[in-house]
Every structure is written in structure tokens, then in C-alpha cells.
Length: 461
Image 1: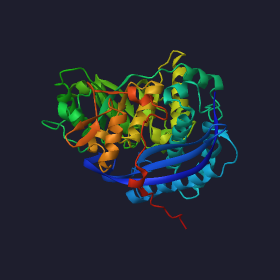
Image 2 (image 1 turned 135 degrees about the vertical axis):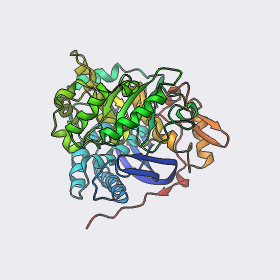
Image 3 (image 1 turned 30 degrees about the vertical axis):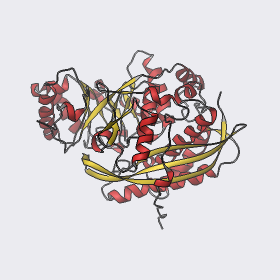
Image 4 (image 1 turned 135 degrees about the horizontal axis):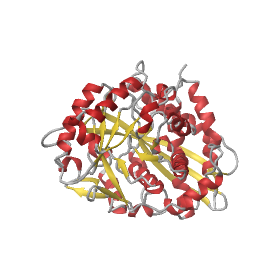
């Protein structure tokens, strides 16, 4: 039974995060970026007040890759998206379901951001982060964990934003969900990451025993084929089976370039260790070109969209173009992920294969990785990209007492490594058992007094 609520306050905080190694994807290299935190205070109709939290990195040049913008300008967009969303959420009157609140504001959010030249994908960041904190507060106030609460559709998710579905489609999908006990990590290999030898892709200490690998592409078929050959030679030495996915981050200019890569994968024997293990190719072309380019003969492959997923109708549009899948990321919106998972299940029932994948860009130890992991474990994502633990040392700049609190609350998900508390990976998997405490996948909140207020972005003049 959905519960209704009213949002009484929303506060934003941040903390710097330094990377242990550079991460290059597309045309950007990241060495550090802030992590943003949301604290939401709500009143649940008939039940009193409750507080929830969420977290996410403020990552440059992913939500908006326009070349004329600096990395700092794209982070400014995310800050503005948060501030605009806060104003919209707090302006809502009366009680509403958690999803109903989201549905009330999402169109106005996109419109308000567009007036400041903030694209839809970046605009959605604000509601996505607030929604997670509101849901955490709702579940805590109701005394329910994420999995039981969502199975009962406590958030009131319906088809008002997805007219291709019926309310019953969503309700039946949620009621049939069972938490995955384990989710395999997919180890990201960035464009600047070492390939061979110690510290390379086949180094078990480096890849944490992963059986799944996500390989970044730079958009040049010849360069990518040569690099994939090197990576494939290394992965072929693993003592266990493996699977790979490829992620171009919009770097392939058009269908011709993508077709050239596909032909190499089909015909080049040196690429067989990659091609034979390939699950799907993620977001090969720029989002605008994607919408204008039916895949044609390439539709026989499993291709998915990620950056092109900037609206509730993105998956149906991509399906019509020949795409088979779409990514789930909590930074794009938990409700959209659930809607898209419902679609994938419904469409697959007609005999074709459609799927939703777990792709992590901004997850770090603590709230963010837990909430994104729980979302995937709910909707059936059996393996998820987890580059946060690879590029950042444990809890990074988080105070030791806070990291210890997360370790104590989630001993199956974290472990002490010397003086560092870091993600604990069990034979290539993350365990989800401790994500069942009341709230959205967390038994502890950040130490708010140890955080700085979010740097306030000024409105464009």
C-alpha cells in the first residue's frame, strides 16, 4: 500500500574525493571530484516525520559532453539541477506518494533547466538524488527495508509517465521481485589503465577476481581493435571464464564507424577472445545521433543506450531503432530504472530479448554504492560495473569514524584492509544481505557535521 508524504526540508552537502589513479573515459580524465550528499526531511501522513539520505559524485563531462563546456561548467550544471529541484520539491503542497511527487516535478525540472541551457540528462540528476533521500526517509518512517517496501510498491509507482505500460504491469513486476543475494562486479578498464603485467587487467589483485569486464572505447575502430586485442590476450590467461562489455561513451561518430568496429569483431581472429565473450556494446554514438540513426543490420547485435537515456520514453524510442537494452544508474533516476526494467520484462515475454544492465559511473563506498547495488539487486541486474572501488581508496576522505560505522552496519559489504575500510568482494561478487535494514539500503547515515554545505551555483544571467 503506497504511503503519502510531504517534503519539509532538503539540504545538500559535499566532500572532496581524490582518485587513487586517473580515470579516462571519452575525452575526459578525472583525478578528483566532489561527492554530493542529500538530507531530506519528510512528514509521512499519519506517521510523523522521518529523515533520509543519498549520495553521488558530481562527475564532469558525462551528463553533458559538449566540447565548448569546461569540466567545471558541467559540474555547475549538476549543482544547479540540484538547487532547481529543491525549489520545486519544497513548493509542492499537500501529501503525495513518493513517485507522485517525482511525477509532479520532473517536467517542470527539465523545462527550468532548459532555460539555463542544462540538458535533460543533467537536469534529471537533481530529482534523482532527492528521490533517493525521500525514499530512504519513507522506508525508515514505515519501518520497512527497500526490498519489501518496493515489492509492496510503497512509493506508489504507476504508469503516468510511461503510457506504453499499465499500472498493473508495474505492480505485478514489483510484487514478483526477490532480492538477489549476490551481484557480480564488472571491472572497468579505463582508457589509460594498464593492460599487461602486474597491475594489468588479468592481475587478480587488481581486478578483485572479477569474471566480468567493462572495456572503454575511444571511437577509433583501428585504435580500439588494437587495444582490445591486447586486452583479450590478457583475459585469455585468466584461470576462469569471463564475459566482457564495451562502452564507447558516445565516441563513435556514426553508424559507419560503428559498423567498422563490428566488422573487425566479426572477422579478426585476433579479437576472438573479446568477440566470443562479448555481451553488449554500450552507447556507441552521441545521444543526438543515436536518436536519428536506426541500427539496420547492426540491430542483430546487443546494443544498449546509456547517455541517450534522458527521458521516460527513451527506451521505447531506442527499441524502435534496434537497441536491445538500457542501463540502470541511480544517478539517472531510480523510478526510471524500475519502469525500464518492467518494460524489458514485458517485451521479453513476447519472445524477443530485451534487458537492463547495471552501469556505475558515480558510486562510491557508503550510501551511493549501497543504494545503486540494492536497486540492481531488486530489478534483477546480476552483474554491475563497479569502478568506484577501483579508482578511489576505500572511503577516501571520509572520516575514519564514519567509515567504521558503515563497516559495522554492513560487515558483508566492507572489510578493513590495514587502516582502510574498503568494499569487500567475495569471489568476484558483492553480497546484499546487510542492505535489508529499514530504509533505502543503509543502516547508517553520514556524519553531517563532518560535511561542508554544497557550493551554491549562481544562476546564469
